[in-house]
Image 1 (tube, rainbow, N blue to C red):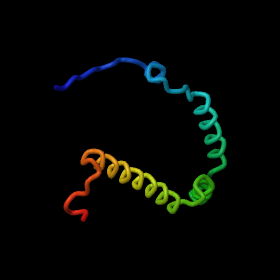
Image 2: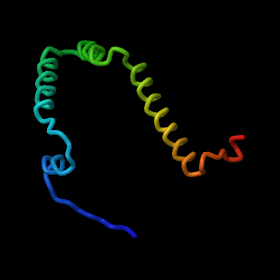
Image 3: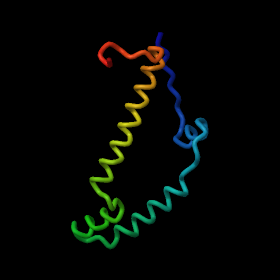
Image 4: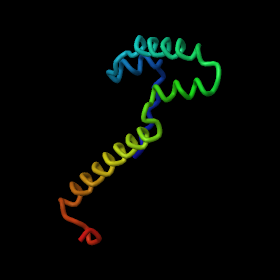
Length: 94
């Protein structure tokens, strides 16, 4: 059986309904900071330098984060499989 529910509300109403915090002030500070930082950028090299300041580990940091998330997903999948099979290993895991 499928049930389809459509709710017409604003993002603020949805946040309140789901109990999520109002991050409007933090977002305003972030946007203001980024706007001020980008005003001094006049060429691609400056933009690249700014990006390196934001993510000092660059591609390596992104890869490490990706590995962390993938590892967590695999652990969750393994735990779900163990719970489903009662902790018994399948024939291919012997």
